[in-house]
Image 1 (spheres, rainbow, N blue to C red):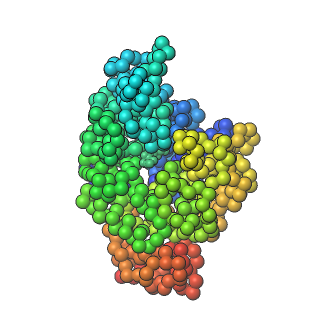
Image 2 (image 1 turned 60 degrees about the horizontal axis):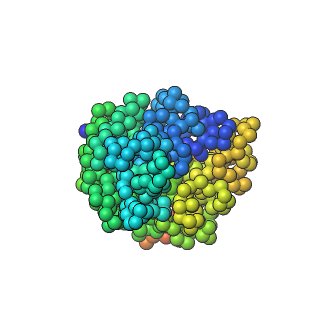
Image 3 (image 1 turned 30 degrees about the horizontal axis):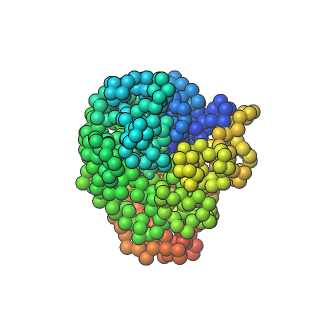
Amino acid sequence: MPDESSWWRSAVIYQIYVRSFADGNGDGTGDLDGVRGKLGYLADLGVDALWFTPWYPSPMADGGYDVADYRDISPMFGSLAAAEKLIDEAHGHGIRIIIDVVPNHCSTEHAWFKRALASKPGSEERQRFWFRPGRGPEEAEPPNNWQSIFGGPAWTRTTNADGTPGEWYLHLFAPEQPDFNWTNPVVAAEFEDILRFWFDRGVDGVRIDSVAVLVKEPTLADETPDSYTDRDGNHDIYRGWRRVAEEYPDKALIGEIWLPDAERFARYLRADELHVAFNFEFLCCAWDAGKLRAVVDRTLAAHKPVGAPATWVLSNHDVVRHVTRYGRADTSFDMADRRIGAPTDLELGRRRARAAALLTLALPGGAYLYQGEELGLAEVEDLPDEVRQDPIWARSEHTDRGRDGCRVPLPWSGSRQPYGFSPDGATAQPWLPQPESWGEQTVRAQEGRADSMLTLYSEILRLRHELTELGDGPMNWLPAAAGVLAFARGPEFACVVNVSGQPAELSDGEVLAASSSLVDGRLPADTAVWLRTRG
Ligand code: ISL
C-alpha cells in the first residue's frame, strides 16, 4: 500500500500536449527535444509532474489517441532514446513523468489490427477486436445501432481480399480507432506488459484514457444505458493494472473517467484499483459560489469512503479553455455544446481564471494544469475551418467545431507567429495557426511582470510547496457572505474567493497571495486571496 504521503496525493501535474508545446527541430510540430529544452521553465514554474498526451507512433487521426505501437515514440516527436533522455533529465529537475495509455482502442495501423484484417472471420486475430457480420440483406447494416462518441455509426465495414464487402468492426471513437475486445485475456496481458515496458523506463505514472468504456455488453445488442459505459467488468481490468503498478515503488494510475454519478466514479478509486481520477464535475462547473461549493462537497464526500485524494482541474485538451468559458454568460462546460463563438468578455474571463487558480490550488488533493493556462490563453475560436484537424468536426457533419481551439501551439516569445514555438529560422509554420494577438501573452512577455498570469502561477505554486497545509489533507468551510467561498486548511491558512459579483469584506489576516489587488482592504468581485490567519 502506498503511504499517506505518496507524491500523487498532492501533486500539481502539468499536461503537455506534445504536438503543441515546443518544436525543437523546426518542422512546425512540437517534439520531445522541444520539451527537454523547456524543462528549466517547467521547474521554475514549480510543477511536480508532467503528463504527456500520447507520444507513440500514430497516423494522428485523433491527435495520437490512435496508437499504432504502444512501445515506441512517434518519429514526429523523436525516438525512444529521446524519451529516455527526457525522463532522466526531468527526474534530474525533480519532475515526475506520466504517460498516456489508451486501452480502449488502437489505430487501424496497429500491427494487431492489420493482422486481423488479413485474417478470416472468427480467427484468433479478429478476436482481439470486435468483428461481426452486419445485419439485414447482404449484411449491409451495422451489427447494432451504437453511435460513435465522435458522431456517426460506431461500426465500419471491412473489405475482403477479393474486394467483396466483409465483416464490420466496432469503434466507439473514429473509424481509425478500432476497439479492443477486453474479454480476450490476450488483450489484458498485452496491456500489463505495456505498463511494465514504461515503468521499467522510469515513468512514474500513467494517465488512462477513456477508463469506463472498455467492457462492452457481451451480446452487442442495440444500445441501452450500460451497453459500454461503466460496466462492472472494468474493475477487474484495473485491479490487474494496480497489481502491476505495485510491482514498482510509488507508481500512480490516473483515470480519465467521465461519469455523472460520483459514487460510481469513486468505485474506480477503491484501494485495489486506480489511485486518482480527473474531477470533471469541477471542470464543468459554472462560476457560481453555490454550485462550486456543492461540487467541492460532493467530490470530497465521494472520495472519502475509498480513501483516495480528490483532484481539481479547469482545462485540458478536450475542453474549451477556461478563460473563455469564464468570460461567457454561461460559464459551465458542456461536451455536447462547446458554444464556440458565443459572446465572451476575455478580461472578465481572465480575472476569474486568476481567482480560480487560487481556489484550485488551495483545495485538498492534487491539481492538473493544462499547458498555456499559466499564460491565461483563451480558446482560439476563429481558426479557419479548413485547418481544423479534430475528427469531431467532420464526424459531427460540421456541427461541432471540436477541440482544435485549445490545442494551438504555445507562444514563447516574440511578437508574431511562431512566437518562439519553433526555433529561429524554421521555415515550417506551426501545425495550427496562432492568433495575431498573442504577442502580449508569450512566456517572455509575462516573465517578471508583476501582474501577469505566469507570475501569479509561479508565485502560488511556490507557496503551495512551502505551505505544508496545502495539497492532500482536511479542509473546512468558514462562515462567509453570500456568494463568497471561504475555507480553512489547518488553523492558520484560509482561501477566500469572491464569486458574488460585489466587493466583500475580508477578515483579518496576512495576505499571502491575491488574484487581483484588494481595494480599501476589501475583496473585489471575482478575486481570491490566500490568507495567513492567526488561530
Ligand atoms: O466525449 C465524451 C463524451 O461525449 C467523453 O466522455 C470522451 O469519452 C472523452 O472525452 C474521451 O477522451 C479521451 O479519449 C478520446 C480522445 O479523443 C480524447 O482526446 C481523450 O482525452 C479517444 O481516445
